[in-house]
Image (cartoon, rainbow, N blue to C red; front, side, top):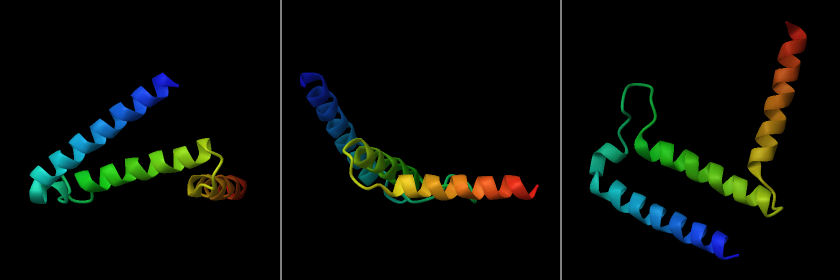
Length: 83
């Protein structure tokens, strides 16, 4: 269990560093790099939500990711059938 605790501590440290870096960048944090692109804060939020949903799945808790994948797969099957 020490390995997982070490990994979790390192992850928390990385998150703390990311938060400090985000606070230092001021408006660049929320500004998209180019028209139609995501801002750094949107990218981080996307990754954070993905990690949270992965943790929910690993712990056996309900996850929105599973529902999204089911809907996507259903859409792909129906799209493939119509072509």
